[in-house]
Image (tube, rainbow, N blue to C red; front, side):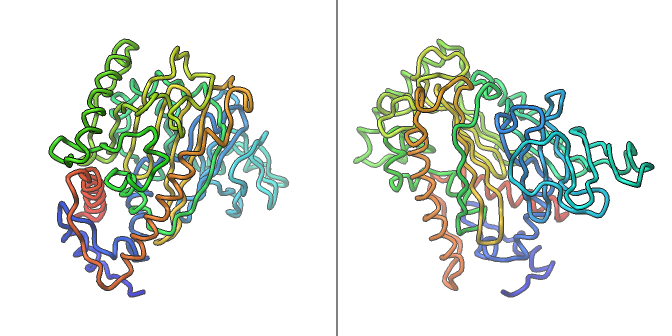
Length: 416
């Protein structure tokens, strides 16, 4: 693979053509991938987990962002903290498992021991180090957005998180994510660049390839009346009627539903909106009926549609009356991306009584596999000498907005 010089990277970023997809090097180049890890995943708020994944004091999860391992742990005061997963003695990785429980954080190399606040409390034969702030675990910025956990590796994280939380929080809060539990979690490695994973998520132009999802999701996401073909006209009118019905349900329940969209021009781009669901309109299942008999957050009826949220650069989420689904996108290599999907149900829901895991996960398991295939196709095309940027369809405007955000953030980081 040919290396790209700094001047080459500058030129690649500068010639991005709005309304068109990115050049192939953005998906295939190791140099661009390294730039992404430094300027995007190293400086922005990254969604990595949800609070129900660390429900009790001592529960932890780890996440790998490039060469950086981070541990998120709930301390004895029930606050979630994040640290670099590196011992302050000789730099060994402390926790190697993806999740678990600890009383203290103990380095397996020389048994330096840290409490859940990151303070060093034991170092054999080195008592002068104990209690010294200089030898405590290095903290990582962590914030909760109504139960969604974001970290930032930068010394000074983007300051707009509070503004995003103020806008999005009222949409998420009624779903009571902190009072949910993990019902299932599946990791899938897609054979494509992380940007292709996100671009694929940001449009429903391809949703004809998701028959399981279309049992409940209207495929007019991002469409206007001008985008609808004559063959789609009847379904589109049914969608509009259903949307009106759901708006009345949401208004009666006091739930905000209108789209909030601020996708570029800021460090932490986002979009949220409540979506009408097809058929019974209760959940993402093959019959669109609820997947869990136990509703979340005190909802009294399952027909609530779906609240959709995505954040730049790496997450999307769905909140329903009976469960929630979170998606975290973690780059692994230029052509490999980890997609972690987590299903959350009410804390008091009983597996096998209130919900069946296979039914709960069926639609998104199928959809994720299909999306992985689409992303792999796009990655293979990016490797072809014939590849060149193509125009976006009107319904792909959020893909264009994501790429605009991405180029803006690269330019900001590169000083362009």
